[in-house]
Amino acid sequence: MSKIPPANQLINTDFKIGILGGGQLGKMLALAAANWDIQIHILDKDPSFPAGSTCSKFVAGDFNNYDDVYQFGKDMDVLTIEIEHVNTEALLQLEKEGKVIHPSPTALNIIKDKGLQKAFYQAQALPTAAFKLYESGAAIKAAIADGQQSLPFVQKTRTAGYDGKGVAVIRQTTDLDKIMDAPSIIEPLVDIKKEIAVIVAQRPSGQIEAFPAVEMTFNQDANLVEFLLCPADISPAIAAEAEQLARSVIDRLGLCGLLAVELFLTQDDRILINEVAPRPHNSGHHTIDSCYTSQFEQHLRAIMDLPLGSTKTKMASVMVNLLGAPDHQGAARYQGLAACLAVEGSKIHLYGKSVTKPYRKMGHATLLAPTVAAAMQNAKYIQQHLKITT
Image (tube, rainbow, N blue to C red; front, top):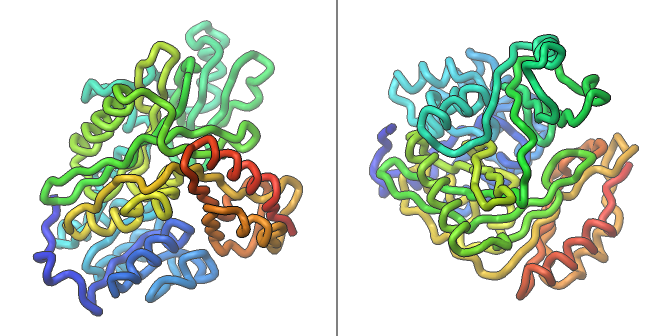
């Protein structure tokens, strides 16, 4: 693991953390860093992106371009990401030159390719669904025609998938036109009782801490998280097993910073790894308001090798993603915001994206209440009354 200066040398006005990516995750990392007087520098294409208004310096560039990443990274004290799909060749070179980079480019190369990610779980004897690899959509269709691939199944593109993109559920032959023409993994359609997630953090000196497991429900149209419940409605034994599995994954990857581990809980109570993200994640947004330490502060602590914060919850919570309304694309307008702010326990976070699109993540709201049921009732009110239109 990378070495960084002693903790008492880290926090000063000149200390610079570079983040590849200027979306809402970069914005919320910059907001957390501001409490400690740490400079956050962002590399992304346009300063109008969400992080542009909150970072110390915005550098216009392409995080998939070798030269842009290399030139940006060589001036940083610590380099991190808010999106996996970045130029890792530049990161590997910077690492050779002694730069502190979390997550490590080696781990990042495994994670950003879902085929390599699944092969890693298999090699490490970590529980995950069975899978096959295909080079193209045509190869998948040929395997179906030859009887080598049965229905139903889930297709996931090996790279570039996020927020429900790059995923297709093929249940019957009438769905075959949904098959994407890209290198992909194919998994059987798992009989899922619940989808849960555990966010875990590790610092270079070895300390690992996990946030309590959360439960996720999905928007069927957009195939992305709609509600997130904390704590998850699972037994203490399953919660402990999920946490231990997340700890095992981050340890075996040798990764520092945050790792969001998305899991399937099957009908017979087996836990399977779905996929992971080596950064702050949508399944941890509730921690800003409902935990002693937010996922964003925890990521900063981890990449600077500072003591990890308490992951205990203050109160039950439900997070709801605030999505762009269907059939609306253009300058964003937030309708019903005042009424939603009047709801007790509502914490509304708008990301500052100037353009809304159907089902685009434009913000989130966390509802705090004595019970998850009470928080869910208020979360549904927010979802129904806060409309993001044009």
